[in-house]
Length: 434
Length: 126
Image 1 (cartoon, chains in turn orange, brown):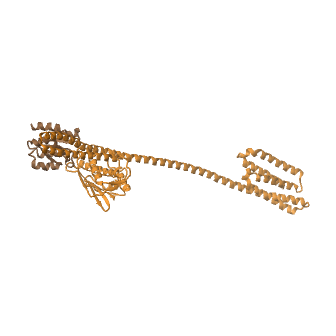
Image 2 (cartoon, each protein chain N blue to C red):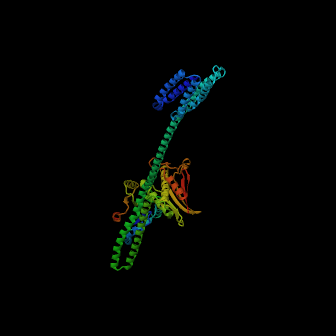
Image 3 (cartoon, each protein chain N blue to C red):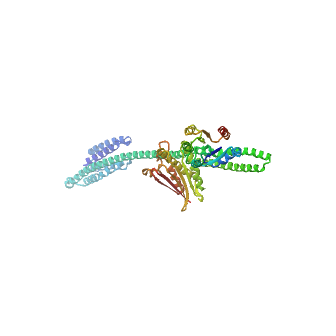
């Protein structure tokens, strides 16, 4: 029965060959494997020719054990380990069979048949199990392949998502930059609206400065004439006039000065510094600037300006530039609304814009009211949204009220409310905490 | 000669009074002032026969100078019609055309050239 041991050894070497053939290990082991196959065949022939009486069986078991031992201890063939252990029963049984033959008498048949049957069974068992094992291995390989496939897919998707994330981040950055630009543009646009108003507002006091200084020069000549004539009384009266004129020059000079300062303050980036400020002055100043700014665009436009400012109003801790922008914005909107209504209603309509200030329960309340077109109900909820505008393209940025909201609510912890009736009036109320 | 000056800037009043100091003292010219178109109309209601010349600013809150002009031409144009000169800081063509069409006799721009105004008044008095 040693034939089966040799066959098993031969087939095991074949398996090793098969397992290594498709890998780089074949370069290392290829020759050795081929040679050892032939060595097995040669050993088999030698055994057959020269050995007998049980020693042939022992030799077969030894050869198989040698091959098994070698394969098991060689790290390169680690893959075959589960198959190798299947050979032990065959080795043991063949060895037992050989030893029994060595020590037995001839013709003792009874146990020999059982042992031969056991050798066969052990041999068949090897290849039966090996087949199952190979099948399992194949399945594992398939699963592994699928895993690799899945991993590739996951990696691909991850790469795609990462790319998308980066693109989105880039877009967010661009949007932020655009937003900053738009806010700057809105600021410049409101400054543009101011320019004409500022020019007019500066021109007026400058005219007075020029006129009063000119007339004062004339008066001094006259005063000298009177003095020469000896009319001291008249000279004194003229001197009084001159003094009044100088007072007026100073007054109008200061007026122009204030306007220029206000303009600079508006164009300057907000310092973000809160300081006690007189809301009445801001309201009055920006109402006039907005009015003249609009009139520079439409010279026929006229409106009645009503200021109802509480003289006892305490100073409020605010960022004056920012609150000034809000007021300018509300006034510009108010005038725009009355202008639109004037276009619709004709000459009987009297455009009126009023501003009120008062103190109410720890707050300073500023009310800006116009008798213009009002805000339609369906639009009312959207007016504070960025980029919402009812003006024709190019006329409004849609940022005015949204920025106003941010300045009052987020910047100052105040409130901004609107009350309106379509075709009747609009009234914005700003409350600033004291 | 009675002149009504309509301007929303109150400081226009001492300016005119001082510029025409001699004329006022000699009794050649006397001034009255109105701070708005509405005030000017209520003044004219009582004393339109006295007024020879009206100098009005165009850009005033409330009733504009041009509206006032049309009202004057409509309500107080009985002969001899008052001379109306319009004054504006915006001396552009559009404003000028509008003023002349509404019946202005003359159109002056701010800052007022008082010497020019005096010349015009002289020819008017003759």
